[in-house]
Length: 551
Image (cartoon, rainbow, N blue to C red):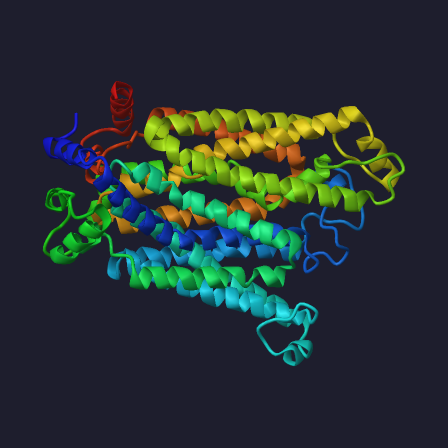
């Protein structure tokens, strides 16, 4: 049962339909999408990793994939796990660890809005360094003096590249923490689910833009695109968007909070009532800093445990490994191959086909995250997480069975041609591709956006900064662990073994969600935090399950 004040809040929030409500929705959506440009840059950084996998900068032989290594054989001349690419892929996560820690400090010190502004500066500097590093390759040009670039060695190029990636990673870590909090605090309770998913939608949109830009362009050209995104993000945040009302009220800036609420909700919305509702839950007058004793409170440690496990299951589902190495996986599985006996351009054909099919993965990621925006407030967080777990588990099992049962072995080009010229093998490869798309779709509906959304909803404002810092740092530690260890797993237990591990973790995640994750749909943030007072987490989960069924 909701508190009386909470019921008033929800009722008032839904009482304004029609034109005024549309105006309110437009401004809130504009603010959310503008802030989410920072996470577009986040997604672009991930997509930049994926498109670099087969680039000439990392592959002197223009082939990064070792088919036989994926299936347990040895071969020469090809390597999926190029050491330079492994560093390139994982170093962003190290920067994100620093960025998450920095954002956790800044988010309460200087505010949500100013922290996002700081994030855009890190993005800008990082991408400038990356773009400048490519001037080492004279034919591509660059920001720096070409004559200067020609006089320096390849070590200079890699130093600039990795430094830029670390700084970009700082921006990634900061945006992954502050953007979900900003969106959650500007959104009304009724719109928070849909607007909260904009964060993950923007990440996936950035991934698609990076992959599509890099598909026909060289990497140096694509490095300039996020520079423009950073500038646009900076302009919108500085000149148009307000600080969140909750942060302003917590810092005794009631007048500014009222103005921000009018900007977000519209002139005809009962702003005073919402302001009064928020004031009842924040430390009005002066912002009281969290203390160590607060960490012993059930309103802190139970949500923290839930959020940490959600992030663990999200990353150890193998999503980043599949996204970063999807071209290699498709190549090794023969997905996208259209070969005929005697084909003399087999590697080129496989590479082109796998790259084209990887683009379908990007669009699936983006489209189904968009669909999730419309489903999350209709069906709730728990149902999407549970259904996503089922779909991901089945997909991973089927793909691993295919890779194990129909391995692509090759010692020469004739072996590859003979394998893929058989209709049966081509059919199974297509089925494996469909399963991968199903995995991506189910992840995008549930485990992609919802852990970040729940992270922004579960904690009270007093400990939200430190809590989201811990969760974000842990998330990027999980990202670094999975991406840096994927090649090791493939070498030891092959690609199908790695997918079995991912499937097992997804299976466990289903039961964790079933028994421990509460439903937060349609509730003010302050009321969600109050659920954990004097209640065990299992009771909270059962309580929300019953409430959800009655709605």
